[in-house]
Length: 173
Image (tube, rainbow, N blue to C red; front, side, top):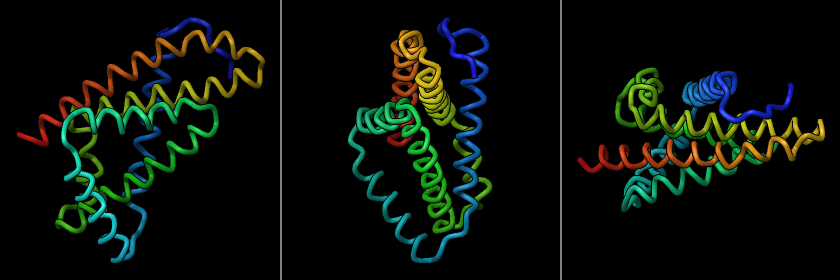
């Protein structure tokens, strides 16, 4: 993989989209991974607790932005992001199963909501940047790639802030 030097080229946008889609597939795999009744109850309860603890869009944003920042860390971030999204798929499926909603329908929901699309785009940018930073470390071009990071972080910030505002508005209306 060749290190990029120009920020936000069309090629980079395409790779952001591809990465976002791959992350979504990880969520879907997590959703369709079998769970025991105890796991379903535990994960459904966890989701209820999380939803009850949300006081404003800042809670949603800070959680998502923290995850995205973690995803930007070379190698560790990619592994962590895969783990987080797989588990998010499992929580989504547990909530669906405990309420009688089809898992397939629940797995498609993130792409049917604008905030879900924005979140996956933000995570895709973050994960791709982490991967690129990892390869640029190997090729000793880390400093060049590090120059692109502030713009990518700004993009992630905007995407996840918009997603959090929309998500909170939908949750509370």
